[in-house]
Figure (tube, rainbow over the protein chains, first blue to last red):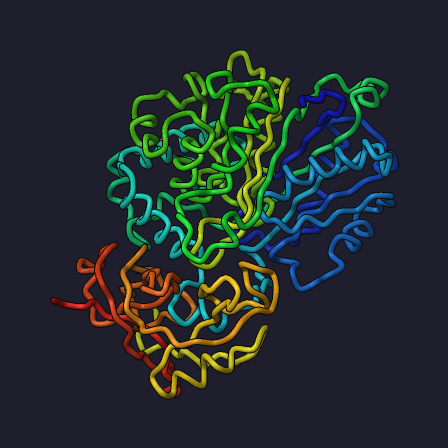
Length: 388
Length: 140
């Protein structure tokens, strides 16, 4: 059932930078400083903290506690989010539960990472024996495999992926926090000429690892009113699933967690796909956007290429898509990535979208994706619907 | 990029679960996988429990090594362990026994690689000569 008792009452986001030379802590500090400046609240009112694990600090199992020390926070509720790009929306959802449980009153949901400066993650487990030898170390190879299967089972038009990349790039041109390298328009010719890096995946289908941070302030609607915070967004429905089809050896890998949770999420919010005013999907690769359009029922399974080609996805269109440029065109701040799509949704719901402000921004659908598994779809899928 | 042949060190066996039967069998040219005796199904990669039952109802059994390409890609960008191997044909192979693994397709041109093509087990070698499973297109 839809509940409208908890709000996101503030957000902050640092610019996305490449090889900044700075740490996740430093980016986190910049995000907190900006959040306090924007909301005017006293730092010591923050009594809950959700932190996203950072690639650049992954060697420290006490990262969340260190973060409290770094920021001078004394939370009575602390959560370390280990779902990569799902940790921001997942962190907000967990903070809402903690607030409802009385574990804290005002929670900071913080994601910061600097993998383009310092990569200190080692996934361990089976990878050394079974994934690295055949040369599938990185996400591009995994997504190449996934795309190949999608193209085999369904209709995959390169021009549709190109349109996603071009539309998001257009949006990024107006995003002051987007990586400066991406501040030039893209054409379909640029896209189609883009180098294939893991067939059929092109470079322009892909994100680039960068550095950056984002932060959200979660509290009850009542507390926000007391603090005079009038710009709020209501997270009204959230769902996540990890390791979908995890008890099968030969699942259909084109089925993602979103196929499992998408329709129920919309029902929980009392909405249909045509009610969604903007879609801010996790976009590590363009194919993930395409597959999510189908999973949430914006179009039929296999129909996303035609849907994209026939739909205005710009901020003025029928289904505005990643109006800040998404990660593909703003840059992927490591595992803080999921907060980038969420920050843009909240910005839009606050009416602060600037040149890409969506008209009648009454709701937004935001998603997260976490972790590349072995010979499957992706690891965690999370989705949140927010209302103004 | 350095174009000299890549170093593919032999990974440490038993790093996270017992994988010794897999490595021992490679020396006899046999591919061993975990089999759940209760569900009567294979699983791969090796796990600490059966993904079907959650119990340690597991034993190692050989698979024939015949299958089809379920998904495929050609890795064209440099990365750790990839020097001298690009373009690299990679596939998720679905074996006749109903289990998948990620493997290289050797002696295969990128434009020959396609989903649905039958493949069979061959043995590639890591840097120190350690046999490692790969597949080749079954022609005819």
